Length: 211
Image (tube, rainbow, N blue to C red; front, top):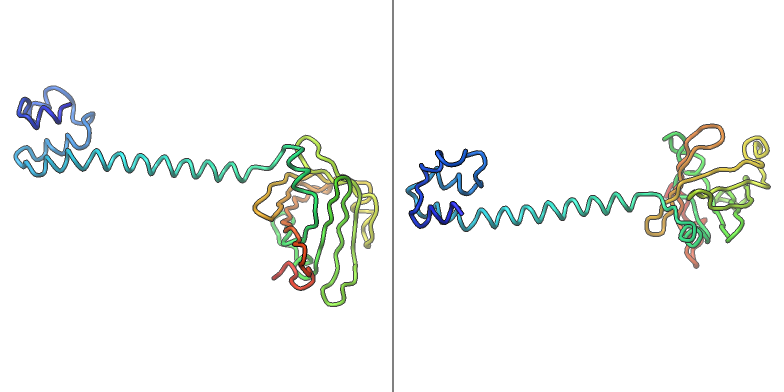
């Protein structure tokens, strides 16, 4: 190495200009060239700079790895078997948005969805009297890596118009006990919903989505 030659006196720093351009020399060797008579500075450059470069290289690799893992975790789950295993259960809606606009309805009421291996039903009710004011249900399948619901029955003023016989496909991903589904509705509106798995002893009316 050039550093070794400088340290042992076989090559003087000023001679480096005639051998290699400064721009391609390692940083610590260029540092030595700027302090040719200061032995302590040279020793510091030789001992500290390579270690610092190594540490920053390791930190950079760790940062890139963390970013890559984070990106992978946010990808939708598409494996049919894994999707089926994760979807089955009871869920309480946490939030919903239509074309990016938060839903006020879900902030003031409670919506629960029950997913069995072949069917689904969701119900919406007010926490004050627990009276159901809207509901829908039907079948679901995994198609092309997406969760697809088809509504077969329900109640509500616009159920037949908006939902009956229609299929809704969603991309799904899971974060801890939350299920995030997103996709376009038949009317072209982009819907995103966040559901949280209901715990065994949980009284869901005690904390609406707004809380």
